[in-house]
Image 1 (cartoon, helix red, strand yellow):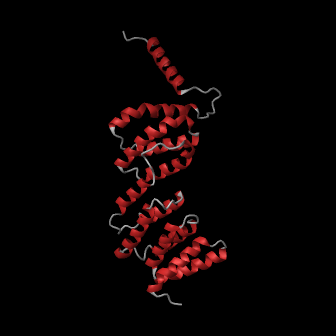
Image 2 (cartoon, helix red, strand yellow):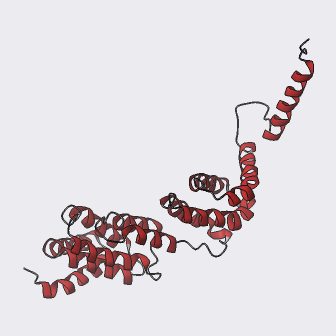
Length: 261
């Protein structure tokens, strides 16, 4: 049956709620099929309804995010030059992504922010993308050690997405040295390695003061990493010992070399 524009909103809302609440594959398929029909007739209302339901859903957001992403990629070419459509969709996506009450899982967030940032006609997509990314990670307070693994994943994603943003990169570096570095010895080797890779990426535009102040810390962390890296040598020589050995060899070579007549 045809769905008139007046009833499309209500129908899309009901179907989106069903998609989020049903448990059986058969019921999920029926809800998806109904939403597909809405999207073919009234795509904007379909997108808005899914995001509206997603914003209120507290437990089962995954099928909604997956369905939204699938439809987004399906209709992307169709609305690529439609300013009015992209503006409406961008407004709805930005509201969902910016809502602190919508506690998206990391992968769900990555999916939706990835869709948002390709809305090239949306007038403030770059600025809004930066603001949304920065809002998802708190740089004002320490991170509990118990939450560090989850935080590290989010830090990696957000910091690398904004690696070319000098202001954001400086903020991430400051946070790392103030709140992550003091806990370094308590972090797992894998998390330490992940943070070191992040620092390498976001240190492309370091302020001179930050570089001068924190270079010794980075040097220490790198030496620790080298000391704990397994080697194929039967005798492992620490970086400090290697340096001392090299220095001693140089001095010996200098003292034993013949002087010019």
